[in-house]
Amino acid sequence: RYSLQRPSAARVLLCFKQRVRMAAHVVSSLGFAAVAPQRRQLHQCKVTKVIRSSSTSGAQHTRSSSSSVRRGVVRCAAAAGGAGAKGKEEEAFEGEMLANNAASLDGKLRTLVIGLRDPNGDGSLLHRKSSATVFKNKTWLDAFKIPGQHITITDVESGKSIRKPISVSPYHARSTAPNSDVSVVELLLDSASDEADENFFAASQPPMQLKVGAVKGAGFENVLFPEYNLASAIERGHCIVCVAGGSRGMGPLHAVLEWPPVASHADAHPVTLFYMRAGDAAGGMQSAAYIEEWDSWREGGVKVVPCYGSFEDGLFKVQEALAGGGSGGGKFGSVVGSDPKKVTVLMAGLSGEETKAMLQIFSAARQVPKQQILVMPDFAFRKSK
Image 1: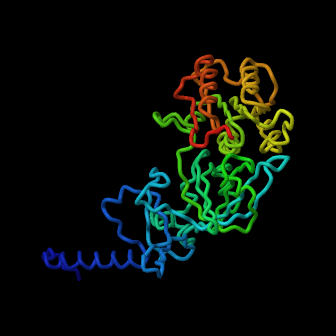
Image 2: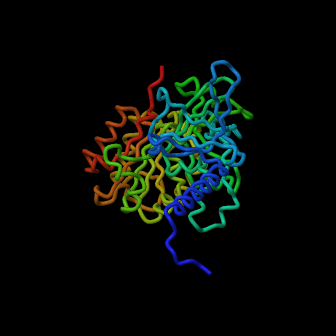
Image 3: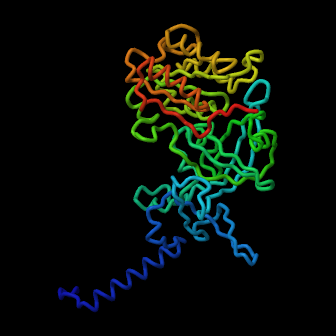
């Protein structure tokens, strides 16, 4: 028999305290740590294992843990904080070089294949459709959402480090090793670049232990007007023009061209790749990146226009293609269509002067709105020696 009398205030307070203690016990058993109020706005949480060194300095070294959440602590880092901020510890994850493959016929360009220990979380929770799935671990791969994002890799032994755009799409990274605790990404490197550390990694061979930073960047996006980006260009049915400056531009734009939304977009709308400085005028295609994929891109509807020799030599081929001439395959003859307002241009790997030259062609001459010309300046070409 149940009593219909109203419970006393003391009884209500006792029940409340019991519920608080029960909730605290559940949270404690799952290994969640309290986050200070001033850090609640930070995101991209990653479960890491903190190991205190035995030195008197008390420095802490972090490594990604593939063990259960119960042994972890939650550490948050701001997504837009950027690398190298003083007083902020950069997230680092355990990685390993899996392969170093030739990306050009002459072998000067290299594809670095990197595997990361990236736990998928508690598999016993994946079958549940309720909100309880929030207890699934955050993974490194969760931050890799769009082409054009970049990472920093560091050789554990030598301390040499480079920051490069990921040269495969998020779909490729997820499909390479599905349902495993390893994420696989690739970086395009030039063994004859003007950066000593890049040359070091391009010449290295596995096994090599790496520290891999968190995925950074917003991909191809207008900094002042974020609503203008690659994803919105696809939604609006724009013609997409990719301008790659050498290998530094082909890395992130390779990720764009193999991204499934772009691949399907190319079947209904013009998608064009201008590969500037694709190779020496003498060597031609021997030193161009991903040449074995060009035919498959063309079969999928993409016009591929390699521009050998100097940048100035390539400008003629760009203007020729915009005028409706030249070759390059693809499904559509026109590069920009009849409405310049429905064109989005992606640029990567170009120097400041080269970018100005392209802006003159697309914005001034072809009347493409400037906000729809998306430039990736962080990995620009620098004239060597």
